[in-house]
Amino acid sequence: MTTRTDTEPQAGPRPAPAATRTPAARRRRRPAWVPYLPYLLPGAVAFVVVIGYPFAMNVYYSLFKWRGGMAPMRWNGLGNYADLLHDSAFWTSFQNSIAMILAMVVVPTLIGLVLAAVLFDYLGRRFGPRVAAFLRATYYLPQILPVAVAGVLWNWILNSQTGALNVILRGIGIDSPPNWLGDTTTALPSVMLVLIWVQVGYPVVIFMSALQRVDPELYEAAELDGAGWWRRFRAITIPQIRPETFVVTLTCTVAALKVFGPIYVLTRGGPESSTLVPSYYSYLNFFDKSKVGYGAAVATVLTLVIILVAVVILALQNRAERREQEGR
Amino acid sequence: MSTVTTTPTAGAAPAAAPSSAARGPVRATRPDERYRRGVGRWFVLAAAVVVALLMLSPFVIMVLNAFKSPAEYSQDGPLSIPSELYLDGVQNFWTRTNFPQKLWNSVFISALVAVFGTLLSLLSAYAIGVGRIKGRLWIVTLFLVANMLPQEALIYPLFDMAQKVGLSNSPWSIIIIFTVIQAAFGTYLLASVLGTFPPALLEAAQLDGAGRWRILWQVVYPIVKPTLGVLMIFFFIWTWNEFFIPLVMLTTNDTQTIPIALASLQGDRMMDAPTTNAGALVSLIPALVFFLIFQRTLTRGVTAGAVK
Image (cartoon, rainbow over all chains, first blue to last red; front, top):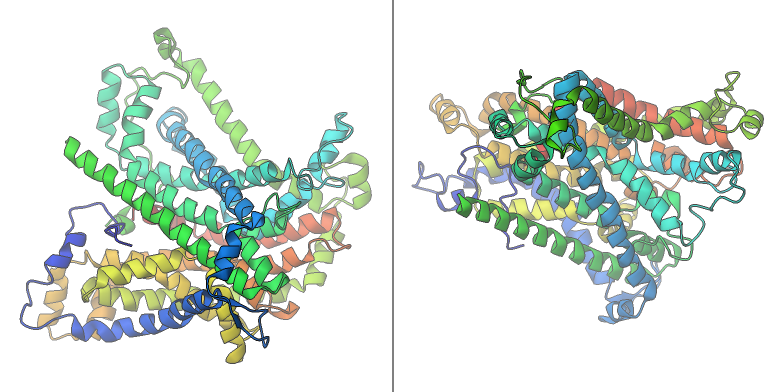
């Protein structure tokens, strides 16, 4: 990662990352940081053992054909990766990742922006903060639910025979309601709807707290100038909370690329791979098909994609910030 | 630092919004509508309430059907209010999963991860933020990337390692793994908080002859305590909700956590509607209770995460 990692908490007049160049100018004689190294030791050891080494091993495994356990490991070079290129399931899984990004990032962020602005700037002022806080809590509720629990609940609601939704639909006269999670055409949209439901509360809460940072005088001045709600939303709200929007986009995109639990409990990637995602595909190869090397290759590619996407988002953020500073 | 000082969002309203200025309802494009806010605002409220009801409906359906007998369900459907309290679903789930044990497993794992993870974050962040160790930017970046890694890219080697050291199917394997994964994020967050630590305080403590260890616990720790609290709550909830690694590592019934136990009952023949709903309800209650207790701190914490 070459992007400057000033994803560090921003805000405030702070030496920020430029501080690298002014290392404790106060104590210049000998590197004052050396005695602090022991404090980093437990973290460093733990990191190497639990993350660094396993990750390296995973990359190593991806170069072999291996059925796992005591089975012999046969060197395969980049063969697994070459196979991935011709594996339609692999491509499907990444295609579905785009759907996951739509359901976990794009739609919730857009809805969240509007809901947060309406709650904060409109309903909060007209009906009092308690109403706004209550509504926000209801939007946030699915977020505190363990994702597996949400999945099990929805799996039942969407069940074609006994599920609540279809029982209701039959009750109002629809004789053959769709098999939501069992049909290749409806499975992916159904999963996406569940994920939107899970995800919406997160941007709402973050954006609402971001809005408190915005100087109320900006809004008052705009109002005096006769700007309507929508104009103020576009001209003040959206630019002012851009940092939070980037954070939401970054964290949710990474989460969307990594998504596993909801797929596992809702559809197990089916029917016919229509909801397959990379993490589940890698899991399948590891523990179901006993193709450990191949699963490791999928996981490695997924890692690279995530890092690449994160770098792009961070670079966009840096550029936006720079442009904003130049604009002033 | 925003992390510590943000006011809890709950109840903090823009003080005294000027009521004289005309504010148009959402769809106000025609200027004259701007003044009819008396009506428009009710529409907006209604829309927001409809969204809230949509969000709540799965929970409502869950509660309605957790206590409804299968016979009544097939007769009256999911939306009726149960005519009598049917507790077999809860009981069924409770005994089949041996729920108290699953609850204990979840609490044990999550609590220890919260404590150890926060401690580890504090130590590393002290070296990075206060000690200003050389190359700290790279270290923080590394931790951040570690936090983004898909767990699939670690699981097989971790599984192997756990078997080799005799920790397969042990809660301790989960505790160790998540302590590190959570601490990777915690270090990143805390390091930047400590990077802004007032140097005057540190210098004063040094002049008083305090060593680094004492400064950490007597100067730094009391000041960042609120942030540590938020981190602990986060770590607890995140670990509580974790699915993938516990699913792979905890292979027998007696070691599983609540989400895994619930998910593994899925597809079971005995899982009728009340059992499924009661299971979801019972599994959600600990998280809900925890959320309600720490709601204020948590809202602040979510904010802290946002402003990073």
